[in-house]
Image (cartoon, rainbow, N blue to C red):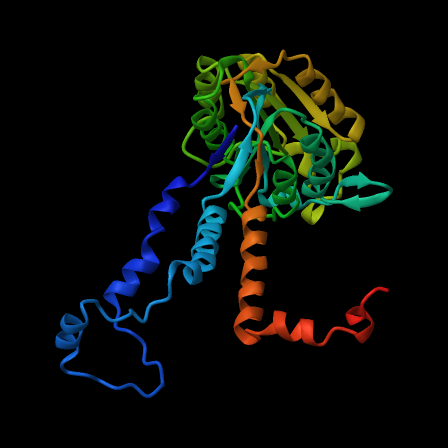
Length: 344
């Protein structure tokens, strides 16, 4: 079906004539004879003097040009029939710990020692972009929790923001309860069976306003399933890797993380390698996609280029005619002589 996206543009059609009536005439630069008794001459002759305005034949090309420009500005388009757009999937929030302890380089990635946050960025990056049909969001938390990316289908941007996360950007402590509380606030408006939170941390909660188990109880009431991931090497593998010979892996509160997962119907995982993190993806894939608000889209094909091209062509013809008003006659006069010869 043909229609205009902005049909109100045609209200501007009388604008040139209104400007002609309201604005003073521009000086022509030619000599003119002003006759004070023009009215008397017109009465004696029985007719009015010829107007200096061009006739309709001279105005017609400019009227057509103006209408073509208005038509292009009104955005003509061919709109197809409404087509359903699939909108199913999960609402998945990632809460990533960026506290000071995530800077410990006790992890391995492709044979090199990397920090815990670097490993999370490598492992969860592909995981985020692989969530086809899911809305994905990102929470960064330390001493406080911040929503870095709201729920969106733009998974690539969420991955970029995860890659750009820095240690200490949210403080040096670990506020697990505040991160869960922020996720509850963001997920409670979404369909009940599609609410998922993946929480990644390497330590115990030592900051924030809400206790982790209290926040988990609120999440359970809102039917939010929480998958917790404990990041860090095994204690026996990192005895002297911490500062002053301390063992950073001893700070991991696996008991609380397991309780959070069990209370909300999720699961707890240890992330030591990429293969272990894939277990989370398998668990999430077992969730049935939930149909969300049905949407429809009508494909539209823009047609403004056609009247715009017509206006451009007409402008060129008017410019040529104005610069070279006698070009048809001169063209005929300059024809090759062999075209002027008569046939025998």
